[in-house]
Amino acid sequence: MGNTITIMNAKGGVGKSTLVLALADTLSTHHGKHVLVIDSDAHASVSNMLMAPDWLEAAQAHGQTVVDCFIAMVLEGASPDWREFIVKGVSDIDDARTICLMPGGGHLTLFEREISKGGREVQLRKAIRAFLDDVRKVYDYVLIDSAPGLSVLTECWLREADFYIAPTKPDFICVRGLQFLDEFRQRDLSIGFAESLGVVINMRDPHSTADEQFDRWLRQDVRNWCFEQSIMRTAALQAAAHFCPRPRSYWAKYPGQTGKCLRYLTLELLDRVAARQYRRAQASTDPATAANHVGRSVSAGDAPNW
Image (spheres, rainbow, N blue to C red):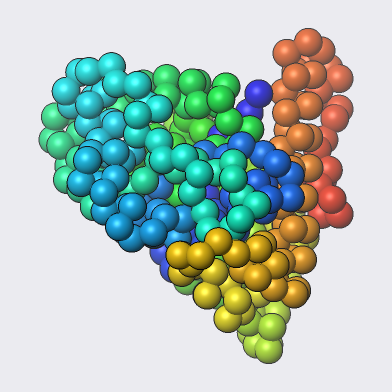
């Protein structure tokens, strides 16, 4: 079953980590899903959002990060149990008790340099493939917060995960990041690439005419397969990025319209994944039927055959 999703835009600053946080919180709180969040960004942003600072520092100090896991697998030739690098019960929402985290580490860039210097890209990809084969059996959803740009590790996630979501701000530079990602996807399709679940228009200013125009322009291109629900730039989402030492309710963290938008976006995500899973299952038993079945989102229309 395909349930591993990397969140990626070649451009930074599009709200990837906050989106991963909100999706994980919503999947756990309102749908009871067991979610693994993998922090594959050297800044460890989503780790700081999901854990208290002292917990994260302890995990990093004890080598309990995604980087340490792959250092052992690829550079040291060991066979570590990936479960030893998982932190359970993260999130500051009292009802979100089914989120686990593989924290990020600042030594990720150095790790990627060692991979490139030693020509071990193929080994890394094989390790990630085996790792994802294991974790998709344990968790309902695996959300990977990939670093911007196309680093060695980010490319591996894009080629080995089942799906990817591309968040973007509605502006020219961030949209160029989407185009760059699509151009990269078109190269060497024979060696595999995650399937697109669509574009999330994120951090939109509800009072900006320019943002509204870019929103419309993005939705006009069917290849983007934009999620119907866009996410507005709000003070509530900015505040949600700060880990609260005292557990709080979902609605305290995502009040009012912000919470409603996130719940609807998550429903769209569940629907799109289910449609893709159905089509894959049909393809394995009846290719002719699968070719005629196109997944449909909550209200966003047919998915393109990318």
